[in-house]
Length: 268
Image (cartoon, rainbow, N blue to C red):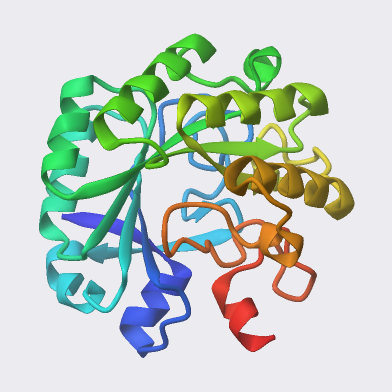
């Protein structure tokens, strides 16, 4: 079974230097969806070895699975293709890591039950943007289908164990984005926040990034919704499943990060 590993995970298992506590994996083959911001869409010319800023490397999972055991968590990003749910089940059965996370689009609830039984304890859902911005970025399914799916997933995985991925800076209205975050927390889910990153070869490659100041304000709001208090610098840490830090997923390592990963926190 072949998968793609993020550059950080790949170098960790080949060079022995672990900077992140989460091993990140991505399905091979590209995605049938049309999302205008994503390099994995088969409908654009972007390099499929990349997702956002990160380069991914193919590996045989059976051959390297034992090298993944030092990680606290294994995170699998799915792509929309034929029988991807079955492929995800195969991948997750091979991996022997205590924490398992999976990011999906709306799928049949029965698959969620199967994922839960084989050890997936946190689920990611790529909602990505607001309802009024939905068609602009060409998301698959409908906004309301995602909402129904998120609520169903909460029933299976429990409150605060479903992370809804939101990308700030794709042309959405700020007030609608904030209201969406409030709704997500009212349902019992969490928000994993991303800053829009233009990727060469995608229809949105020339779209500007959000300013760091504006993104910091959104991070502050998310932290208050999640924790009920001010976060100060803690609000700017990467938001996501336990042990998630997505090192430099949205940012240049030489510049101030949008989402502060663990390796930067430890060096301060």
